[in-house]
Amino acid sequence: MPDYIEIILRTFGAFFILIITTRFLGKQTLAQMTYFDFVIAITMGAIVANLAFNTHIKAYHLLLSFGIFVGITFLIAYMCLKSQKARKFFAGDPTIVIQNGKILEHNMKKMRYTLDYLNQELREKNAFDIEEVLFAILEINGTLTLLKKPQYRTVTRQDLWIASSPEYRLPIELIMDGKIIDKNLKENKITLSWLEKELKKRNLWVNDVTYGVLGANGQLYLDTYNDHLQSPIDQE
Image 1 (cartoon, rainbow, N blue to C red):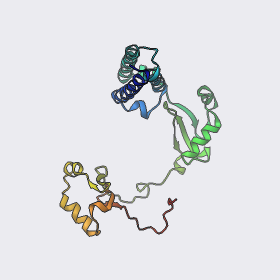
Image 2 (cartoon, one colour):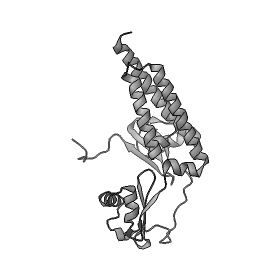
Image 3 (tube, rainbow, N blue to C red):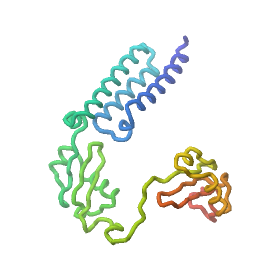
Image 4 (cartoon, rainbow, N blue to C red):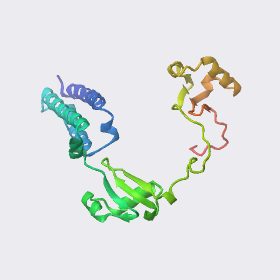
């Protein structure tokens, strides 16, 4: 077999193996990059890259190595699911970096977390003054979460004693790209006649609508292809 054919086949195989394995291991590998997840991603990428183009290494040797690595990963993930000690060992613990508006320099040094990066993370969370912060915690996936002091927190309807309508469901997508999502209609017991009636009220057809969603508050939101804007700000 010519080398270029073998590389093409190995590359396609490596791609699908990586996709299937990622789905098997779960979304956490993508969503929360802890130390453990970082090592997984690097190692899986290296093995699959060699599988794709390194013809000097036999494919079944790489597949064997990859299979063993996936097995170890799955076993460790299972251990972490069952044991708090295992979770702490492989993922680490969250670290407090601000307490009562005071920076904990010792904790930051242990994490090699700089003041510049801390300030950047605080600004991204609309905290421009450290004294506004009651607690700031560096999570195990590297993100910073914070709790502001009571006087600096956003006022809620509950704080103002304003009544709010209860919401018992997520928004339901009914129309996407000019096509009705029949599955969502059936699952939520929404009739096609009701939807057509709502469209008729707005002098619209289904194929006029880019996106249609029934909000948690019961209101129907419709976005049309023709937005009737004189000068769209994103126009090039």
